[in-house]
Image (cartoon, rainbow, N blue to C red; front, side):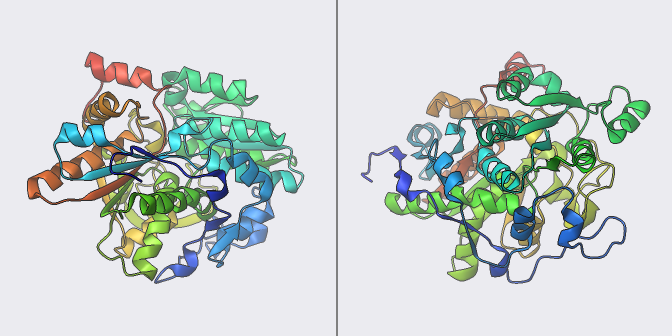
Amino acid sequence: MTTTDTKITLSESDIPTHFYNIAPDLPTPLEPPLHPGTKQPIGPEDLAPIFPMELIKQEVSQEPFIEIPDEVRDIYRLYRPSPLYRARALEEALDTPAHIYYKSEHVSPVGSHKLNTALMQAWANKQEGVKRLATETGAGQWGSALACACQLMGLECMVYMVRISYDQKPYRKVMMKTYGADVVASPSNLTNAGRAILEKHPDSPGSLGLAISEAVEDAAGRDDTKYSLGSVLNHVLLHQTIIGQEAKKQMEIAGEYPDVLIGCHGGGSNFGGIALPFVRDKIKDGKTDLRVIAVEPGACATLTQGKREYDFGDVAATTPLLMMHTLGHEFIPPPVHAGGLRYHGSAPIVSHLLNEGLIEAEAYFQGETFKSAIEFARCEGTIPAPETSHAVHSAMVHARKAKEEGKPTVILFNLSGHGHFDLASYQAYLDGTMDLNA
């Protein structure tokens, strides 16, 4: 890389051949998930009705690296490796001594990092003869990714989309339907969980926890269907580590190593994808000065305000109990525009790392994040998704801090999605109709 290069690219041969599994490298082991009925550690046979065995094995694996199937890796070639950018225009606008880099996952066919795990999950289900996948989606990025992956793998797809996002983001529905998926607003009349909420709260805006309940119920009730989750679980974060692995190679080409590493956090897949390969450096290689920061919305501040305890992943209390930071499985978050971050819990791995002091957490309200997202767009050209605007804002906060301290700082963050289908959110900010403190 020359001193004036802006974009750092890798060849298709540099696509990782293995996913990185942090579980065996953790200083202390993860607490096991518990059966929702017996409250005892859950076994593979308990998960088999909703997940294929390959993903169950990955969920509990103690192998540090798990091979990526050739068929999946071949499809990754459509958009991987994703580029790493030096945000030179933003650095100039902030007048900061910091060097700001961002890994650009918005270049995938669906516009976000979510396709990385969607393809692997669809492949694993196809190998076991599954014909149909059911899932939930908040802002629609995960639903779009699974719809695309199912189409590429020849599976049917059913998506329960959180009602407020279903209304706010109509073109996400169009995208999913273009890929051949069925999409309904959650809560819906299709499941017992949905009907129960609608009976009590006919105007419910929905939540990810509730949409999960509906998708799990759908999958458990059909022999041809399995459930697919876009975040939180170990195997999902595992699949996303291709982001961080590529970023490490690209930072080496740049001749730098991050002082501050940032990702937005809802359930944990985006943050885990960029962070876990670097956290390995902290654990294994003594990179103790590296700050790794998960950034969440102030309106749903799970890591910064939630308790770390066993809780259900869904409103209906049907999923295994996970040890995680949580606001309570019945928590219905305010309808903030960063729909993909409106989750009451967090990935057990991320919660564990926070508890171990290996990562940090920050929370910001959408008035701050949208202001920074617009400044970023006007400097760098890309309009960030509302979710990833939290990472953008945090990067700018730390770049300004570097200026105040006169300290050269290398900042790396994950630009995990574009805002092309979120322009109504930007309009609300620009028109002054957005609740800035949500």
